[in-house]
Image 1 (cartoon, rainbow, N blue to C red):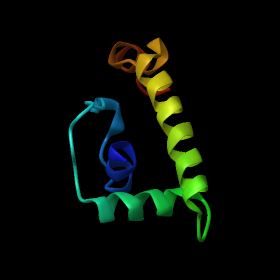
Image 2: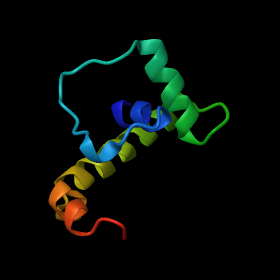
Image 3: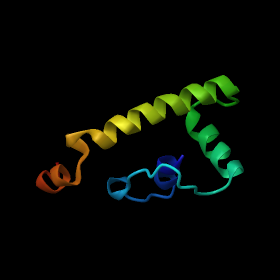
Image 4: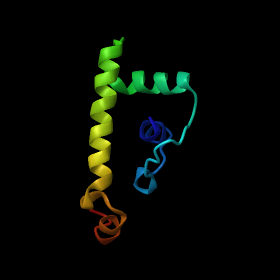
Amino acid sequence: YQYLRRYKQNINLDLFTFTPGSIEGTERECLACLMEFCGRSSPSWTELSNFTHFLNFQLQKCEKSVFCSLVVGVEFSGF
């Protein structure tokens, strides 16, 4: 949710790293954001759950990837 929230607000995601346990926004805001980005007009709880699990998995891989690090971003800026 924190990545999606920042993306929606046009905040640079390159400088953000998820911190477990940190809480932002309300439950209502989180659900509305997830439903907006889920890609379904009226998603079920299962579809939302699958979407959040997939998104979480991808973002964890991205945060650990050397290709998404700030060092690489500085070295290859403009590409």
